Length: 381
Image (cartoon, rainbow, N blue to C red; front, top):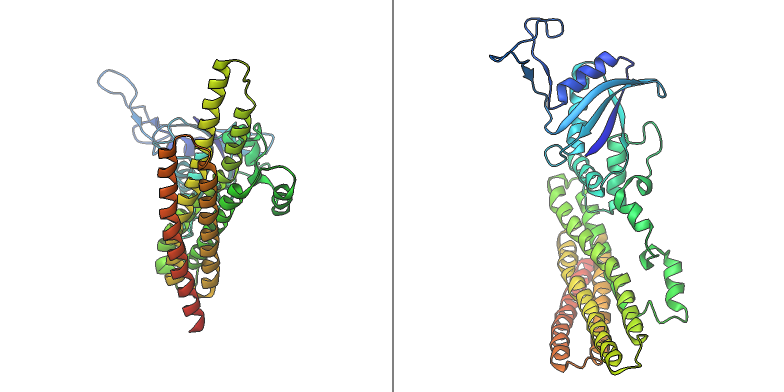
């Protein structure tokens, strides 16, 4: 359930209640003649007849908030699948306008799942014919501004979004460092982050450049009829960025698993056996992660090539640099697969992983050459 209040530019509880009755699923009692003072209509069993409101899975009432000096429609959205919060917001706005009242903003009471705000942000971006292939923080900002969630007090997603609160309790991530911080952490005496994490970061940057070109193309003057085409590319790119960023930290985590396994006790034969098994499992995982980096980075070549061929020509070099970054990500992942797989006792499994890595590597080299050649041809025109 989501509790959300809609702020009105009125002090009238009566007007707020009328809007609430218009939208809540229960609606209002049906009356004869005058809709306010008329006699309540009864059914054959003598029960009141109700005229349902426009929103399923919603309860609402109007009240006056002395603290703010305004009336509100206070709503509980009990089924966000039937009525997403952004749909409820637009409906309240519509019903309020029909009664000469304006919704000035809203406030979410308590915590909210991230998906609620992401869905809202994408909804309002689509209404503007804007790409949703942007960072989730920016999508949430659109949701906050579109629904006026900061109308009465500042809205801090880190304090209101459930997932952010949970993440805040966890350990620090490499991806949360500044560019300078990441570079200096990599340069330090610790063995992680290393080439695997840097390869994943390169992949995220390669996908980010392709996504940037898609977003610029989506909003390019005169290209309005193709905004959705480029927006779809941007959203694909954003998904790749997110997975690559996950792999930045996961590659380092996989190395830490190996260190933890080597630190297990080895006094008895059973302990030695358990330790050896743990080391092999951790090594396998540390080989699979850079392979995943290769797979995800390679998938972004489609985005880079499409933007070189069809994107904003003024940004063609950006898409080309993106292809170079993707090649670096694949090549870096390949080297990590090779070195980590060498410690696997299951040589058949190791050979299978290396074979797949080699295939991706070969295809990536060809894709990068093709894309950068197209960039240079475009620049020469």
